[in-house]
Image (cartoon, rainbow, N blue to C red; front, side, top):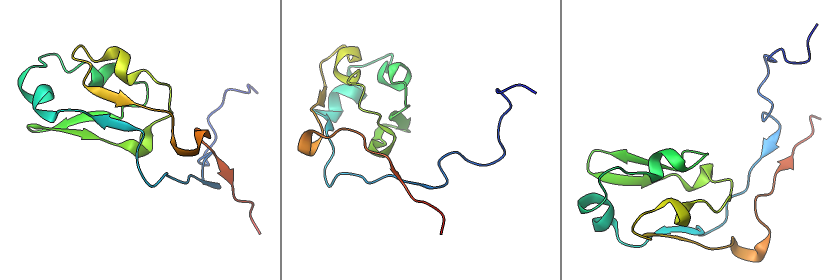
Length: 99
């Protein structure tokens, strides 16, 4: 058998992900996204698909962020602010052991 068989169980089922109180990503001016940006590159260069569009509104799913720092580099209008997460700890994964 191969090691590459997909397991039936979700590998994150015992993982608790704690979110920060505030996000380290911010859209500086949402009007720029709506009125100037034609190609919406943030929706495809982000490896975690943090950015998406619902009708005429940009949606930022902060919980999907893996903190790679690509956000500000891919925006042609420098309209995405990215800072190191609060506390400087970055993404933390906590594992909950089964009792």
